[in-house]
Every structure is written in structure tokens, then in C-alpha cells.
Image (cartoon, rainbow, N blue to C red):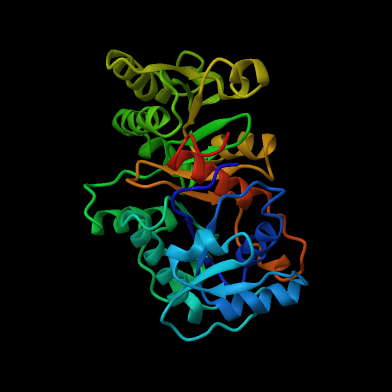
Length: 340
């Protein structure tokens, strides 16, 4: 494995969750997992306390980001925040620590946009704890889009991608109730998302001529209108418009036959019309290895595809597979020649 020119920035995430656990576990197996250098933005004594609780021998070193690559082989580099210390209280999502969670994300974005870090890996956050502390954004991704704009980027259009060894899939609509999907789904939205996916497949994933497969919304892609009008009225015109732009898109396709092995061989990325239509196949195929990557941002951001799992935090049972995969993918997307 070649090493990066710059390290990756990792956010602390919810202190009461498993984010700290998987960071520490992954560093402990950094050689076996072929991890490029990264540093954590947060509270070093807190991470040292969690490591001790987990029985992990992780030397936690408070440092500057520019020393992270040098320190990473022998210690976990932590860039501190100018905030009060955090108590190690696994299983408790406390709004009092929201300032740390938010500041860690803000600092990480500043480091990536400022050229200090190659890419950003975000640890899971607890939205309720943040909302209770006054966090005004719908979620992690929307906050990152705003931070990108604050850093001088034009209007961002963040798009969620689930990446596993055997499937890349994007939900066109994300965190909205299923009952609201038909009204939210427009040809314009489908086209906008597909354009972002096409662009990043070329620029980030280095797929010269990406093939996009678009799922239908209704069973059997609407059965010629017998099972719903949206497929013919919304998705089909979007596919036609994309093809007219030179994008290799096809659909709407019946979602129940899109994700078996032979079907996956015919496309590079699938676009699903709602959250579970995308995440069920992604997690079925790669529950422990799937990565959440955000397309449409001016920087690379990945995240493990799991939540804070408060119920097992501090117990030593959290698996670091998805976090490790997120670190490796971030490095590759930031520099595709990084890892052979």
C-alpha cells in the first residue's frame, strides 16, 4: 500500500455511540486492514478512556494535522478542539456534547477544503441529540452541503451513494416518508441526481462511460400504467432526456429483478427511487462492508453505513469493517492511484 500525500480527516461523531469504538478498533488493525493514514478531530483524553474501556492498546497522541502521517504508524493522531473535555459515557447520546460533534465536522471540512487533508470520513451522529441542542439541518449530508458553500463552493447538490464490493446504488429520494415519495419524485429531480452520479462516476470512480440503471417506482415498473402512472410519466421521460444528453441510462426497470448477479453485470450504478429500494439490496449484499459516500460535493466524503448503535457502545462488539472500508474508499476516490 502506498501512503497518501496528506492524511484523511475523521470526525468524532456521537461520543456515546460506536463511532469511537470502530475508529480505535480499525487503528488497532491498521496494517491488516491496509488503512492509509488518518487523524481524528476531537477529544484525545476521551478517546484514550474509551480505548482503555475496550481493552485496546491504542496510544492516543494529541497533535497537529500536518504530523498525522508521521505519527499514524505508531499512534492514533488526534487534532484537539478548543472545547471542554468529554466524559466517556457509552450508550448515552447527550445534547451537551453536540458542540463537539458539530465542531469536529466543521473543522474536518475546513481541513479538506483548505488542502490539509485529502478527504473526509464522518463517524455516525445521533440526530436527536443534535436536534435537542438546536441543530437546524435535516441531517449530516445537508450540513456538509452548507459547509461546502461557506467554503466558497457554488450551490452543492449532495447525493447519497451506497457503495459495496458488488453494488453501487443511489436513492433519488432519501429521508422522507414513503407516502411522500410519489409527490417528491419529478423528472427534474431524477435528471439532476443522474447527472451528479454520471459526473462523479467519471471523475471519482474513473469509469469512462458509466452505465446507469434506473429502477421503476411501482411494482413491475408500473405494468404499462396498470400499477401506477409515475414510471411512464416521470421516470421514462427523465431517462429519455438523459440519453439525449449522451448519458448511458436505461429504465424504468422492475426493481425486483435489478439486483441479482447477472443484472448487476449490466450496469455500473443503480438509481433507486426511494430509500429502502436502494438500501435493502445494498445491505443485503454487503451488510458489514457497505460505505455511504456523498456525491456532488467539492470534496470526497465517505462514512460507515451504520448508525451510532448506542446499545453496544463501549462493549467491544462493534465491527470496524464498514469504517475501514470507508477510509479505504475515501483514499481511493481522492487519489485513485493511491491503493493498488
